[in-house]
Length: 542
Image (tube, rainbow, N blue to C red; front, side):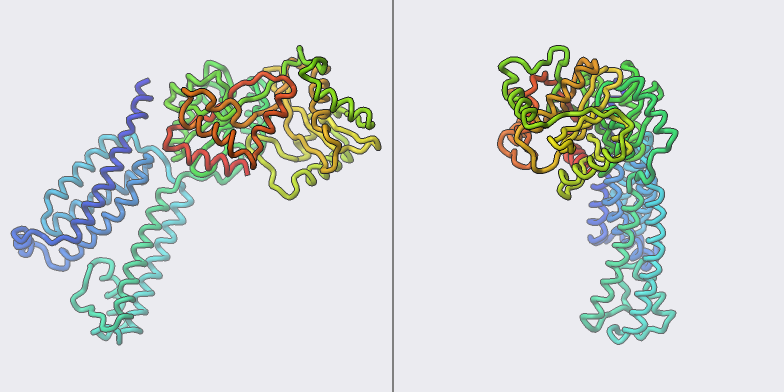
């Protein structure tokens, strides 16, 4: 609990604000004149060239502190090291520039604060990006030196000095150490533009290098085979939802907790989004969540969990995270399911109609005949109509995947497959669910009712106690006055902005089969991070 309270206090955030403020102080100090009494003292001790150079150092360190503040905010170790070095330079620059004891003292106090809370800065940066940034920095500095040298040598008619090659090199180097050179007087507008361009190129180069130092760790490689095998074993032992099967797709990476759980996640937009709850012993949920948070923090990622059950909300809250209801899952009790009765009249009508027309259903167990998979591929392509497959929390058409699941097909009177769906096991929960549901364009009305009724009856005959019809997005969200404002906003979207995803139409279709509804949640770090997490989810689904 103490760890959670410390995480909520986040001293690195306060230090980040101070770092940004120190950057402002530096910039202001760089452009304001020194106190005359202090300047008279410095004139006897420090050469003019040094004082002029330290004024530039003050401005550049202020610029650097602005950029570094974001890394300090995120607890990055590299940012911490570079900020300490920058503050040390800043302290000396203030003293040599104009004996600015006040500004130097502020820099020293900030150094003390960063050292005291050094344990809060453990987030790693991406090593290949750092390497690329430093390599680019070296090339850019070399380019800037060549650019300035060539410019001063070839364009000296625009200045009051005629440069030879060595003088042009020295003049370019001075541009990085002094604000102005009394001997460098541009006599034309182009000359002034060229001199300014050297400064701009130098500033952009330094800025790029600093941003590269702050890049989060990137996942460049797929999970290893041994990790996938270990994850598959844990899913078989502890999986409780259809999502557990989707955790084994090749778009997932894996985090294994010390307590024997696996968290399947995908990375996007500096966010590691886990699919469902940790899969493992129930008593390990809180520890697994906290270990995953620490893992993400070390990599400078946000941690989130998508489509979690209501069972572990207290564990997520104990870990300092927040929950947002995103919809409800439709669960049909197969032990009570029947097509009889008034509530099932519309479904029964569709079933009777399709059967009169000569349509039939057929269940195929894996492995499947290649000809069947070829036909299903054609139907899938027609159904997609050029759209990309939705991924992450759903399956997609992949022959190897379908060849491991039962498939129920709808056949027309000529025996041609015109629609299909595949069944996915819920492992230890002993239920079954549906994943892909696809059909060709031209079909009699009621074909999907017929397909789903056949799915439920087939699962019933196979002995499953429960059937998962999948998530009904935004269903049951924000319907009560006391619900959070975000959920009420989502409810408005559900009821008024319904054209793209047809949330209500999908909910109404599933409601035909008399399911019970179980809430599902998005778990995220805090309100400020929610837009970032939402963008990450959107990118993962595409």
